[in-house]
Image (tube, rainbow, N blue to C red):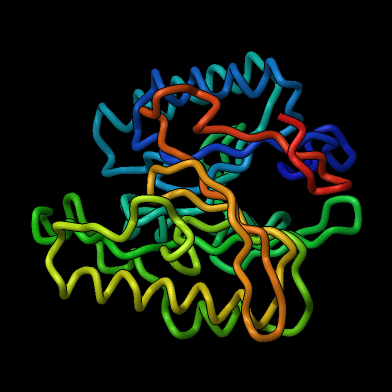
Amino acid sequence: MTHPLYPKGSDPLLVGLAGDWHGNAGEGCAAILRLVSYGADIIVHLGDFGFWRDDMTTRDFLMDVERILAESDLNLVWVDGNHEDHARLNELPVDDPTGLRKISDHVWHLPRGYRWAWHSKTWMALGGAHSVDRQRRTPGFSWWPEETLTDAEVAYGERPGRVDVLVCHDAPTTDLIPGMNESNWPAEEIRASVAHQARIRDVVETVKPSVLYHGHFHTRYEADFIYESGETHVVGLAHGGARTIDENVVVIDAVTLWPVV
C-alpha cells in the first residue's frame, strides 16, 4: 500500500490546507475542488472535519468527500477538532505501516503528536480544543470529553526534536485573532478554552515551529506569535461557511513553506 502522505511516491510540492467543514458535504467538496484547481498534491484538514456519530448524515458526508478525492486522485489527512465523535475515532485502529487511522481509501486521520517529513521539513499534527458551547450539547451524542489534549498527548508533542510546521485545530492564543476579545460564552468555558490554548502554547514554545496553521475560530488571519525563546508565524483559516472559499483554504509550497495561493 502506498503511504497516504506520499501517495505518488514522492513528497508533495503543493500542500492544500482547509479549515472546519463540520460535516457539510457541499462546503467540503467545493473546498476540495478549489484546492484541486490550485494544483494541490495533498490536503491537510485542520479539524472539525465532520467525523461524527455513525449515522446516515456522517456516512453521506464521508462518501461524498471520498468520491471527490478519488475522482481528483488526491488524499486528505486531518487533525481532529473538538466537534468529532472522539470515542468512535479512538476505537479505530492505527495502521501499523503508516501510523495513521484509515477512514476511507483517500481519507486518513493524523493522531495527536504524529510527525512526518516533507522535503526535510518536519510537520506535526496536534488536534483537540475545548468546546465553549458544551453545555448546549449532549455527552456521547454531540460532545465528548476526549476533545481536549491530555497531559500524555502534550508530553508526546513536546518530545525532543524541532518541528517546522505545526498543524492544529486550536490556537496558541486568541490575543492575535481579530474580534476575539468580545464573547458571550460563560466565563468558566472561556477559562477552560484559554487553558487549552496554553497547552498548545507550551508545545509551540518547546518545538518552536516556523509556522502554525489552525482552524476552530472560523476566522482567516495571519500574525506573528512572539515568545521568550522564539517566534512562530500563525495562520488561522475560516470555516467552510465563510464569505468566500478562499478564506477556508490555503496552498503552500512544501519546500519554502510560503503560501502560493
